[in-house]
Image (cartoon, rainbow, N blue to C red; front, side, top):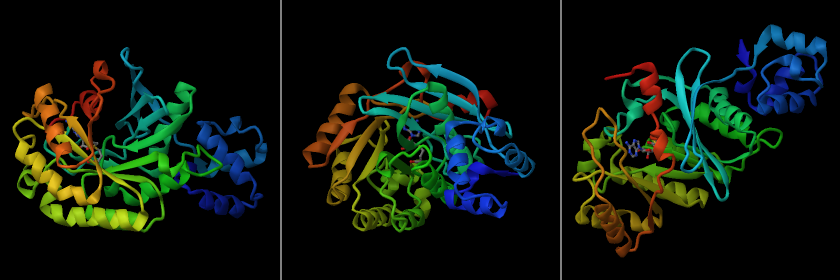
Length: 343
Ligand code: SAH
């Protein structure tokens, strides 16, 4: 049965018109879907006969909260959500001065294989539907009873490896009749799927793009990110430049600092030389420990020293503040534990 949340607004409208109903019903139903109503009988402004018709041919997907952890340190909330097919995904809500930001997943597992990442252990199970991506925002907002104002696609999965569903989700979450989060308040993070970056540049969507770079050259990137065997760094940086020029949006880079792998003074210098022309901001993330991996984070001094070198070469950079430290917050960990996933 078709999940009404997998329709874009205009598709829902066509569907409703096709059932012989009036066009204005679309906005009514869309509103209920985005409020997290899953029972047609709670859609009180829809006639009983139309509700019955909808029940026969469609469904409204839901997400069960399998586990919810709240940080005592900073109020960060981590959800382990169970999908209708039994698979689990993670979403994290962070509290900032400017409002609530949710970090959401785009796939169950991931096939990109980054060596330091927990989400990739066990590979890709499947991509999420547009409705399942949206449901993370809907049900977190419903559970918290507070408005979420920002979204980062930085949870489990590679968003550009689930391109069409992610775009559909973006259109729906941004729609004025629904949750209506501004595209400028949405960030998509990619490990560097180059064709996806070119495609995204053509969508006319002013979202922020952030690239998980994590290395200053191909040799190091090849050793920690298999995607780099396919799309080399110069190709990736060219795609970034194209994205920036086409959309007029600023880019940023994620750089996970791994002790002894990518955090030397020379690494900072080489990185600065390559990315300075892009004028992008760099978020430095001390690598989170993943049980199955040998990678370690450096000391505070080593991390600060990398930051100092990078900025001394004229690159804007900051060290990402760690939120939810007491709820073991790096993504992929909860799902891995709950489903007993291993290599
Ligand atoms: N697939 C997308 C989004 C998901 S990962 C991407 O690669 O960008 C979100 C971010 O967390 C990425 O920058 C990723 O490289 C980083 N990350 C993954 N595991 C990490 C770890 N153990 N420590 C620090 N950062 C990590």
